[in-house]
Image (cartoon, rainbow, N blue to C red; front, side, top):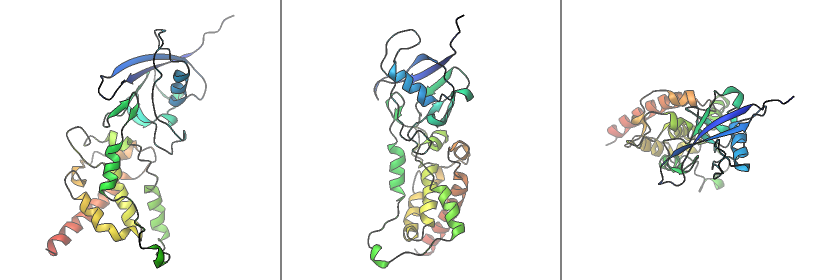
Length: 251
């Protein structure tokens, strides 16, 4: 007696070049227990045949760790920005729609250009400068209570999901985004990074900085690492206000 193979249907938004128009292509794959979106894309790569039986180009996407650490496989799955490696087929409504994140330029298919996020991190100097500090010996120890919440902020993968979910990040604005704001809080809390605290706050106070946040709270709901982004934004609002008054008083 023959058995009917259970199939999984995918509708993937594709784009051949950064300049070309996007289009949708459907694929049907045999179901396997424990299947996630990445394994489905790998199956399409091995056998690039669409639902109509026509040979097609393999779908392009990005992934590295396959365990929700690198942030590379961010895409919009069933209308929600998330990590494809953690998107289990058993928990997704079919047909499963897959598309690139819309707030970033598309390179090809599901591959996007995250330069917007990296420019934001450069703008706020999201790093600890060490030039000239090594010869001074070990820096002050961070209090354990501060270290614990700072560790939560350090989990950011620069995946772009919070930026995609934020309604204030769009083609009409250059809003710096929630990830960079939270990283200012992280590096300003570090005993060595605190030396550049005012520079980071000044960067947040420029055009398209923290004032661009509309407090929709989409970012904290969508963050795959559960980072308290809205708490960071509230804290940086307080710090930038104090910095503003300090600048007025020292003019």
